[in-house]
Image 1 (cartoon, one colour):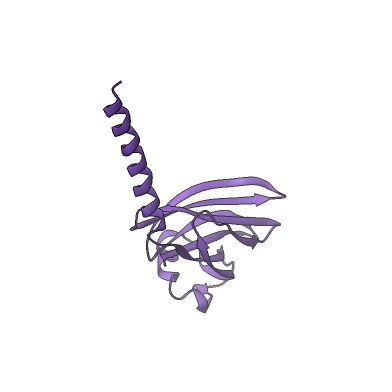
Image 2 (cartoon, rainbow, N blue to C red):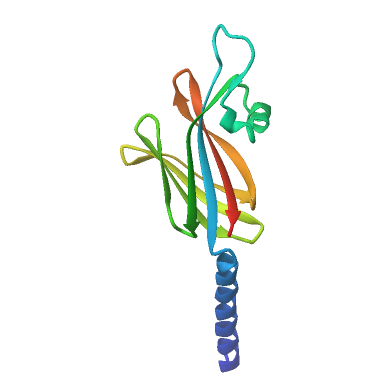
Length: 155
């Protein structure tokens, strides 16, 4: 391999690392909102019941999930750096760990982990469009399930 090729490869590697760093540092922090919701099907009642604090996302929840009752259990906001961990306590001695890991400027990648007694019981990663939200289904709870709504905005 010639000296010119070695230098070219080295410069290309440095440029590549530099571009990767700029992508992540373009939004230095991520405003992250995590809503923990108990979704259930009410028994013996007619009509739907939902927590008024969920009015901004209730139509989305009802279009995806077939429950009749949605109750907000926790609403936690974080201003996280990339690779910084946010922690939310969940019912049933569980903990949600959420970490924004990178961005392409249009989408934010989150690493999501639910632990119980310091053991991972659920792991996933999601790509969330900047300034939007998504809801994932969680573990069962009291004749229903936990839903976790995550929204993210690059700052």
